Structure formats: C-alpha cells, structure tokens
Amino acid sequence: MVDVTAEAAALGERRALTASLVTSGVLGLGAILWGLAARADVLVFDGIYMVAGIALVAVSLLASHAAASEPSHRFPFGRHAATPLTVAMQGAAILATLVYGAVSAVATLVAGGSQAAGSAILAYGVVSGVIAVLVAVWLHRLSPDGELARAEIVSWRAGAAMSAVVAVGGLVAILLVDNGYDRAASFVDPVLVLVAVASVAPLPVRLMREGVHELLEGSAPADVMAAVERAVDEGRAGFDLPDPLVRATKLGRRLYVEVDFVVEEARWDVDAEDRVRRAVVGALEQLPFDLWATVELTTDRELAE
Image (cartoon, rainbow, N blue to C red):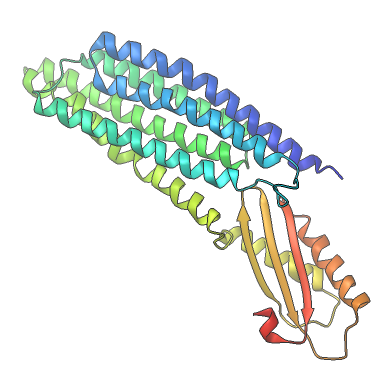
C-alpha cells in the first residue's frame, strides 16, 4: 500500500529544496556582483556562501529522491540514511565556507582594511535580510517536517542573521566616516565577516552533530521517544502485560522501533502474541514516520536485553 502522507511530505520537501536552489542562485550571484562593485568583502563572502549552497541543495534533492525510493535487493531496508548523511555533509560544507570567510577577513585586516562604502553594505544587509526571512518562512510552509528542508531553513535563518550583522556594520561605517574616523571605518568590512562567521558557526556544527547521531543509530529525539512510548502504551492497553523495553532510532523519515515484553511462562501462545503485535504496531503506525517495528514477547529476560 502506498503511504500517501509520506509521498506528500517527500513532494513538499522536494519543492522546498527546488525553491531554495533557485533563490540561492539568484541572490548569491547578485551579492557577488554587488560586493565586487562596492569592493565589500562581506558581500562577496555572503554571495559565495549562497552560491556554494546551490551544490548542497542539489545533493539534498538527490538524497530526497533516494530516501523516498522503494527497498530493493541491493538496499533491502531502503536508503533512508541518505537524509542524515546529506545533513551532515551540509553542515561540513557550510563550516568550510565559514573558515574560508574568516581567513579572508583576517588577510584583509592584515592588509590594512577595506575601502567598502558603508551605504552599500547597509543597503545590502537590509535587502538580503528581508529576502532570507521570507524564504525561510516559505520553505517552512512548503515542507514543515522535512529534515532536508529544515537544514535549508537553518541555512536561510543563518543568512538572515548574517544580513542583520552586515546592516548594523554598514550603519556603523557610515557614522564613523561622518565623524571623521575614516581609518576605523576601513576595518568594519573584515570585522563584519568575522562577526558573521562567529554568529553562524554553531548552526552547521549542530547539523553535523545531528546527522552523525542518526547515522550512528543514536536514540530518537526526546519528543519522538515520548510519542513512541505513548503509542506503545495505547497499543498494549487491554492486555495483561508488564512494562516493555522500548528502543527506537530515527534515520531520516524511517523510524525503527523495538518493543520487548518479558512475560510469564505458559500464559501466551502465538495467536495471542500476534494480537499484541497488531495492536502495538497499529498504534505506532499513527506516527508521521515510515515505520519499521518489531514487537516481541519472551519469557527470557536476557533475550530482551
């Protein structure tokens, strides 16, 4: 049976990624040209940051298609690992871009600063910040639960934060020039790059950490675990069963759940165990994931643990 909800979610995610791809390309190229014309390193850096994101979005689109594909002989469990792998790669690539920006800014400071116009920096910061916020909201509406889309939303929010810093820096540069501090104003551009890098750095680190956590089959997030435990309690209601041992891990949109009940000997047969399985799995299937569940009844605690 086709999971209509999962298909709709995958379609929404691909639409969000495509929208992000197109917008990144247009805004990134515009930022680079604007930055070169204004001789502002921070604008060029922001443009490179967005253009580099185009390749990442393209990879995300491929990962979305892979994760949504049916299991095959070669991949009997599907290819859901493509999602956290891509999220981790996005984090690493964004972090590398930030390192490049920081090195470039330090080189500019050592060279004596930049002659960028504060008005150009201020105008760009305002325009790009508004666009970044609007795109983040748009992507969230297209795919509110997609992990790959969420990574893109994080990237656009980071861009909005950087734009805010750029706008404030441009205003500071204008005030310094108006008050005769031209030498100090020349350092605003590279300092802005360093501030932007420092403010954005935690975001790609978090993406990398979350992606690697899923790839290593770590415990599902706390909210997901709570939902799993509620579903298990609902499914076992009406059966005289002890508290189960519940394990769960999430890999993209795939949720693996193992539920083990340690029961008394000679009280349960296969038919009764199947009724428990159907009830528990039926409750778990209400969760918004591609479910892979195992429900077992055993009299041997060592087998359960």
